[in-house]
Length: 619
Image (cartoon, rainbow, N blue to C red; front, side):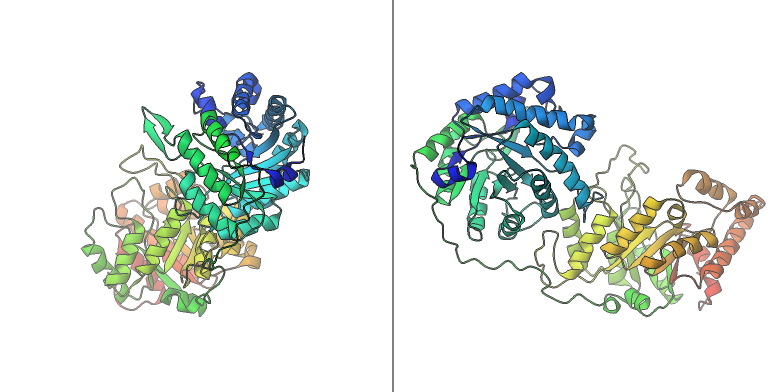
């Protein structure tokens, strides 16, 4: 067989189309793990390869796009990673014979890696390496990394392949309708990155149809001299009787195959919805253009993509009055305010003004169950900022939002005046008026902190400048009870600090010794800490916290005091005294206090804070 890269100098190579589309058309359920069929039904996989070879392709891809350990794990197949990839390579090798190149297909992990997810880049590299080793052993001629959107992840995959082999490497990113990657990175940027990391051929595949992909490849051609590859979807799918039908005709795909070649593309194929019929038409169109050298597209004059730090980040003391107090080492006083049910906010504004008159610095708006019909915390926080003189602290949770959606949310919130954020992973909506509601998490609080930190540097998640940086004060949660017993929680807190957190707000603390231990353990990555204090309303509440809330522990001495309170008024008074005692003990350890709940009982909050010599009477 001829050398692959030399072949690209002499002619355009045609790659196959969608393995998944063809397996689905042959009766394989969409919920099934297609990669596993390399073991359970190798004959069917081989038939798909044969169909594409009959259509005249020069390259077939192994049926291993989702064959990495993390994608196989939900199917209970992680332990078969090597076997699945080895079989996939051998099936393709046998079908290809001596005249067709076999590309070992590797797709994304299906989970986010750092800085957005929990998986470190080195861990991701090891997962990709495991897959690449099996494909190499199975006899692939080249490797193809495809449908990537995260530059951190694709770099880990490239490094993994290079750990295993020096065989030719094709790397393809996927783009949105705007021409940028799914993470917002412009083609001009990711193309240069892929080239620098060692891709022999680079290009685009999946997500969009030929027209958008042509625009993207034109942009890439202006910044690289590497060979280019393109594998578009057969247009956008249309749902017909529960099935996704791709509507681009073979003739339409063939017309764009010519346009791709005119832009210097040396590998043309297809992705979702592309069948052997499409590929046959595309091959005929490409061959009709003759055997010629690269079109030699001259880099066009393009508007430079603005990257990096176009403006200096906003100093901490200038972000908000709250931030200024933290920067100056002043003690901060906070009180919780639950969002109203419905949309009427007049009463909470009146309460906020009264709290301001009592010298409260910040109103914290807690996250409420997303399955309840209450105003969201961010909206109430912005209303407080707009209509009162009180500053607010809004929690922003990761549930039911993807990374780019969260980025858009926060840019809009900043434009509307929100400055102080508490970034949390959030809880699933298992409580509230709609118990069947579900939650989806794209990233956790560590990834979210990384994203907001980047916005504060003036860059988006794709590495592109947003112009003026945001000036969010970044707060994160901490649970001293969990951190004192769980090194994993300690690591997570450290990761939040390293990601850019500027202060921490703790879960309720009932034992000053627990807080002291936490502060000692985080001393080498210390940020200002504000302690949550929850006045206990009764023995029943203390019992619940002790037994049903992870990481929460109420000392037995406090439980005994509440057990002896024989009526609600006595219990309330005892709970306030306990909270005041805790506040007195921790006052010199931290930089602020947050009085949490009982919701709408602001008189209790003010009585607790009275030990700090606040002015005025209680509410």
